[in-house]
Structure formats: C-alpha cells, structure tokens
Image (cartoon, rainbow, N blue to C red; front, side, top):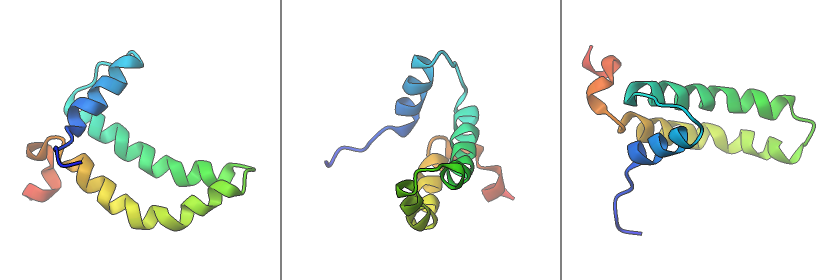
Length: 81
C-alpha cells in the first residue's frame, strides 16, 4: 500500500457516521482519550485474551499518537512551546 492514508478524513467520516460533527482538534482529543481508556477497559474485562493487548499497547501507542498529531500539526501547541 503505497498511497498515503488521510487519517483526518478517515476519522471525520467515522465520527460523522456516528452522528458527531467534530473539529480536527476535537477528533485528536477524542482519539487520545480513547487510547487512555483502552488499557482500563482491558483490565476491567473478564476476557483474559484481551490482556495480551496490554503488552503491545506501550509499543504502538507512541506511533498512534504520532499519527493522531499529523491530523492537523498546526494545532500541536505542546510542540510550539
């Protein structure tokens, strides 16, 4: 797959399907919040197979955060300071 994926459009489309009209910054905030919630959901789950995800989350989370931050780099205030 050589073509560049437009994560902003993909995220906006998915949120719109769920009835949410969100700004780019709101999408980034929502996605980051979901990344924080996932480990808590896994720990609370009675299904122990999903505990395997806890091992890989620390590895993939920084990469996912990079992808999220690329949605609208101008909004990344922490990088401007």
